[in-house]
Length: 84
Image (cartoon, rainbow, N blue to C red):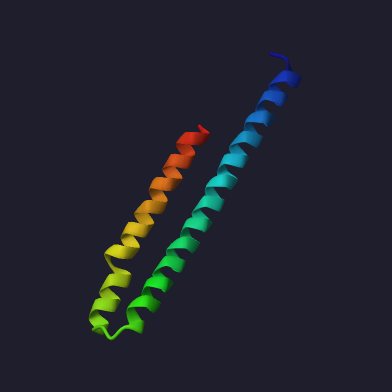
């Protein structure tokens, strides 16, 4: 391989890698925002009705947030597999 063709190959691979990293960061930020939005909506919904405060705090900081986080991880994995 010549030096010019090697540099061209490396630059195209670097751009492709950079775009994938940028896309992953955007998906991560969007997922984090969606998790916060979902927990805030759930908090407002649960506090609007007369419920025990223990139920509200357990539902917000326990399994619901974990499930939302796992969902964003699955979506990120699916997007990464689709781009590969």
